[in-house]
Image (cartoon, rainbow, N blue to C red):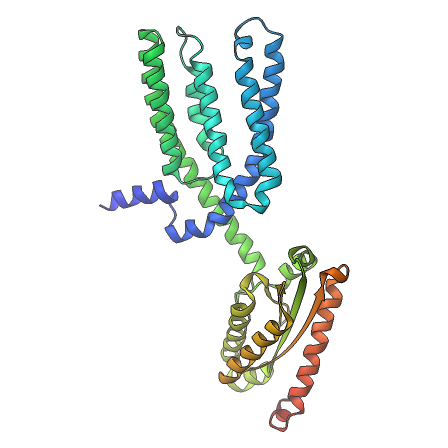
Length: 358
């Protein structure tokens, strides 16, 4: 039973856990999109070069001219759809990947079936190589391999000479098993490498204490936000009041817990992808295309919730309308910070908080 569970895990999730694989799906689609752009462009160029060469040839290549042309046209179409349309519709990536794979298999079958007295060398070659080009669940790639083996076997038995057909069937079955085993092994390595790469990337971007994005990532992403919004962009700047006092009176564990609770509250309202810890007790969050009253309501509810836990955070927010001109991110953040300082001064003017004045 344990062996079967491991085998199931290998076929379904390339050896990693289901949750880990599901978390990698967005990265898998992203990697496949990049590979699809490269391979479809390269394949299109190769097919058209072969087509041009076949027009000047009087031997075997001339017979393949139509196949080269049709495959070249499909590959160019895949490239343009992937390059210009997929960024807005990322769900199309895997469909284009399968179309690419199927075109390669159909091409290899067509070439292999042109001569009844010659072995299906092309079909075997593409059978081994095609499944290794992209990232996917091994079970799906294995299903494609089995389908290709079955299709080639049926065609050669029907249309090729008996001795050649028998050799082709044995070759397809044998190399099909090799292709499945190779796909399982290579995909396991690729998925694990991708998982490690994303883990390293996460560690470079994340604040390890609070789980928010860190200042380094904030600096990299800041100037990208104007392009992420359609109508407006809101910056929320928060500063935790009394962290120094909590550390001194209750210990650093209590201070760390306070920062984590504040970070969780901000991420809950504004999303973990757009929340940053940019200083010891300072947080910045961004929200695209939001109504000012909606942001104000979120801040008010968040302050009430944190106050109920004994925490006090000074927030300031600023908004820029995109239709009024280019958004200057430095000015937007500075305005939100200045309003945060006004809220902080107001907080410390209250008699019950005078003892916390820094």
